[in-house]
Length: 311
Image (cartoon, rainbow, N blue to C red):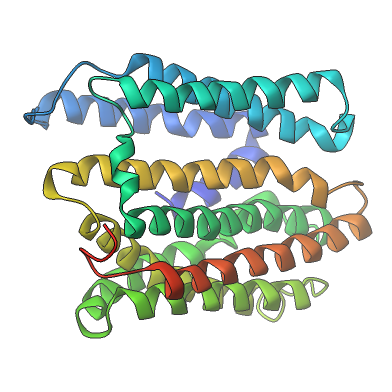
């Protein structure tokens, strides 16, 4: 679906309305609910407890308020009362979330997991890598649609190398972990992603897809393909078996939050709606993303340790 989604979304934008793209999730969600109800067996561990409703509400409120404030800040300014209120409320809700998790009988985010330097470092790595990726992925359609005037369906199809690269390379990277170790792949992946961002920024003024955006997109896809599977493997290796489900969930949530915050901050790179301003903002945003992705690679080298070290 990651391959079909952008193409289908582009077609719906042209044929119906951009609002129609939000309907794509409805049949997928309905299918997921049916599969879980019909086929998934419930498992309960010794530490299972009630659903952490308060934690979920606090996390949702905090992230929602911060995202809104960061999205509106480029237009209203950080000193605007509504933006200040959003930042304060969001920060307060997230602080409340941590307090709730510390006392909850069955927390959605067990804080004791972060006593592991490896687990904490890998989640910081995830925040940087997926933040850079999410910001770049959000910027790219602006360039294709507003600067180079691609049709919406074609702009969606332009993202296919990412889906293909991940699908092909992730299984290969999973096997390479046994030979090279996770550290090497987790360092090489962000370095290639950063290189891809720089290439895209350099060729952003070229309208031809194959000589403009595609080379950088292909390098970025190769880097992500190398990093994703080893990252999952390393996260699960960082915790005891009883916490693997929680660790995987936390890491996926960190990846989604990274993309959410990156998209909220993109407004600072897209001030002005004319093609020249968008092209300038695209290049600046991609170079920042390259620096962030490079930071993830350095973090992998400096912080990733074998299981048991520093836990």
